[in-house]
Image (cartoon, rainbow, N blue to C red; front, side, top):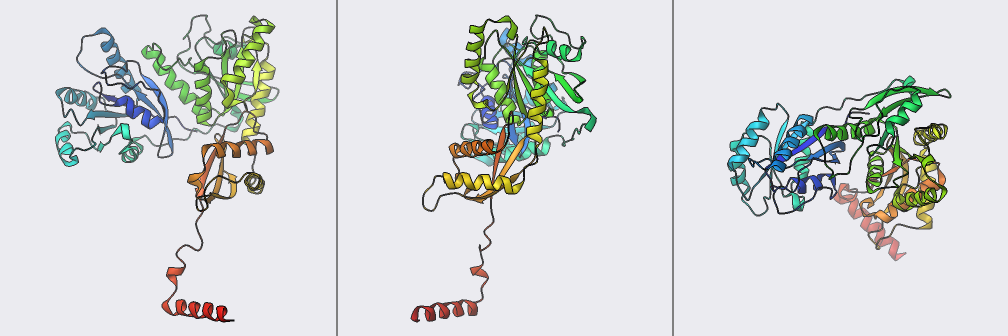
Length: 464
């Protein structure tokens, strides 16, 4: 498990930074409009670049305005550059090279960060002329893109992958036990839960939201099982009011999630399940970490309110019904045994050894009951399956025309595997691979004499 690298997207207002952010993260988290200055806070997202997970940060536009809000956005951008492993400067091909582009490029060069240049909105323009014009900035490589049409992103991804720091695996000692990250919105009781598990005041816990800023690490042992705990800063909603320190805490929380094996998502049961709770559960699933949902402050509610919260869990987290739900009170210590038992169980489920024969039997039975949809020549053929590792738990399926397997059929296959194996709390990542055709090109390897012999043999066979 390695630390997630950070890529910051920087540039003038309205050059397409948010559009590029959405294209890289495959989301619509960043607000996009033709009006300059829409993005003011930093927005963090997760992207896969060349098979590697990264955190992408969308920043507000840099300009010389004296407006107080724009000035705050500039401060946020500077903090994002400080946090970044790679900085991506975005310019606007249609506007051309402007003095503010030169100023931003000059400032970025002084930051001693790996620096790339993406020239956006290049559709229909002379590429050689653009390269010549923007070469004045002295930043190489230059990637010509059209973020709104996702053109040029393959080359940009390759350049970003080359600029990222090398992967340094952080392999824990076997004695460290299960790596457990505590995540959630601010003030849901993460630090209180950590202190209760430890039996001491290791993390500062106050009614004020945002007390925890840096991840707090601790090690405990319960019933012979060691746990390596990480208490993270609260992750606010994406367009909330961020101070610089809170923005850095969000990145560290996402990185802690990546380094964990199991994630306990704390929800303030007295407030119910919010949109941000659902988004955080989605982050855990994307990271492929085992998930336990903890409804904290359970003792503060009456029976009617409890039933309402359980209905909210079923409705708003319907995509994570595989995750166990634990009711607890971090303040009074109730539910801690159930929590650690659930963490141990989901960790064992995610770590189980999946044999190729067992997975293939489930796959073939599922295909036999409901073949994948498709036309006469377009029906995918799924041949066999095998495991591809844990955290994330991957099932690799080999076959032909696998790119045509629809999302609905993928969900059907995942449910089929869940019925056969105990995957409690474990998101399943399906990967499809094309099988090589052993007969491909064989005819072309025949000599002319062999081809004639085959033709004569077929003729004799028809006459008989």
